[in-house]
Image (cartoon, rainbow, N blue to C red; front, side, top):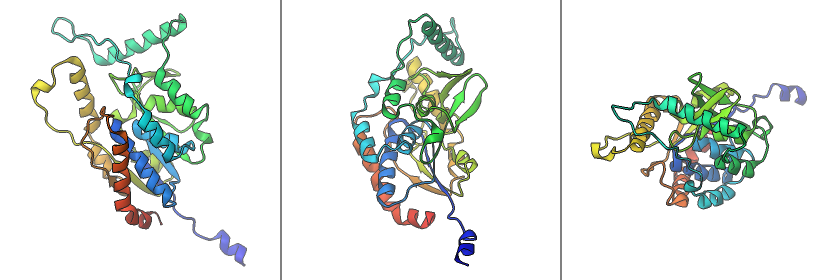
Length: 292
């Protein structure tokens, strides 16, 4: 009789943790994960984009929050940024940024064929951290997204080499070159979908918690956009912000970490992690009730 009762026992609903992109602000996810783990709250599913995918993917691969803090503290973005020589946009010489990024990527491919390629430093770094593990081999369900410039579609990584997927999802335009996988040319997933709640639901999540680290888009003085880099960076910020608020509303529970620093400000990584910890501790009772 007990065996029969076990068969019909209701399964506990699966819950997912969705980690938003946001550059340096995404380091707050480490603090969130640390507090959740200490309270025995391990998500069944982790979905992330951009920095959220990197933190979530490393955690899903077995790297502890303590180790993630060490990695964050030692991380220097200037060692990895690959700024291509952007052409000056003028009335006499107009160039489409999409075409430019594609040309840069195919130039890299040609150099590789000629044996003159430069090392993809960030990909090599990610590989050194997690090795050759595949997403489908992780101890928990994980997925991240990217944008394929060729098809113009969102690409969802649910299998394949984890380090490759993480490299693709963090290919922030202007800072990192797009990465090529098969016939795709991939950019940062956050550009198209910075709150991928829908991906978590498609992975059978019954409940979805979203960690919101986005910074509200504010009006900036004209003089602050004075060169091509700033112009394009502002363009990316605007694209990321578009529809983000609507996507946030689709989550069942939102943990909002208020951070005002720029996405490229890595001057106080442990301070950002601590902000995540503080927010998680403030909400821990609500989180426990939600996932129970």
